[in-house]
Image (cartoon, rainbow, N blue to C red; front, side):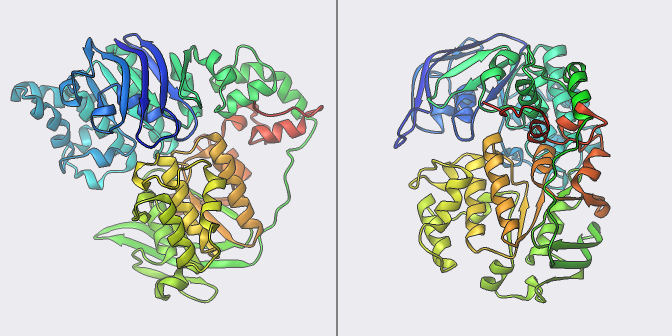
Length: 539
């Protein structure tokens, strides 16, 4: 079905190949999970499967890639569209129409299919991916989860035998992610479609994989059974880290399997208490009262009161479309606010000049590329230093701590999703704002990258900043947040210490909490610290 024979991909100006001497065979009807560090070459590997690499990305590809019996050297993406469906990291960026039903039909129109065939396939796909009630909806009005399902549906209507997805759950809440993964597993099990996907949030996906393909630091690839590859992988979900900590063999990949192995662990943990660091919030830094955000007749934020304190990291959670992003922009000052007040140090950010606004509130948006407008990473960092009158290299230092090794001469739009996010965050941190707001900051970041981000945000809090991050990443919240605020339909439905909120929720509970339930542990480092003798986490 898919064959890579001695494939090497090298981009102009790159110090090393993105992929090196890759030999890989993927049979029909498997779900294959591609893993690896941020920016290591996962997207390049996916791009070889439909000819995007090198026909559109540039660079040099040596070796042979054969997909559904066709050599990609002789068949560019348009010649493979009937065999390979592709969904990129940002599904909305690939939409070419305005309405759900039209988007599902567009690919078939380009292939010249008969209208009767198109109508039949649209109806089948609407049922398959759960979009029947949304068929006439504008794409712009859909939540991220709904847009993801539309993108998958649009890739499926030409009836490809292979579906390739890049970070399909990165922007989704836990419930929406489960819906998308349910669709993918159904495609594999019921229709025999081969699914190849890259994902950083392995805790969501690894238990469904038939095969794991690990892209290594030198561009080589290792493939095998999930439990075998994950045993030595330098990116691993908490369930694997816990299995390594306890020397469980084979490694469990699902919460159900881990709970069956964890009886002794739970007995040990009952004898102690989770090691909390006893952090206490400082004085209020941002105070918002009665904030209302509307878009036409739709109410996105419905009279929210929130106070952010110095030294505290607050996680803003809720399903896609619950109002998280709208609230962040209203707090930052440039987003719409129909009613309510926001004050930082007695100043409304919306009324402050731009230079003062940056010092009051910094916001990294859901689409970080919106902040990037110069030709190279070096120019972006230099501009941030100059705009904020700080020492040269300040912005670059933030970037290196978040994601090391980003080439200074690289164009920001050529970076991976995680690298672009890290650059945008570094630019905002250069102003050292009193309040730091982040919208889905872990999208595109691997586990080591999230550890670095955790350290950065904790350092900001320790220096007296107030931090709020909107996220669906429950594992990241368990590691970094002191407090969780949950929104639903634009209203606050829960607000309290992280442990209290996530432990009481089957949706927002991290993997460790589910495994040791009903005990109050959230993360693998907490468990490791509680055990005697202490054991190292990870490899």
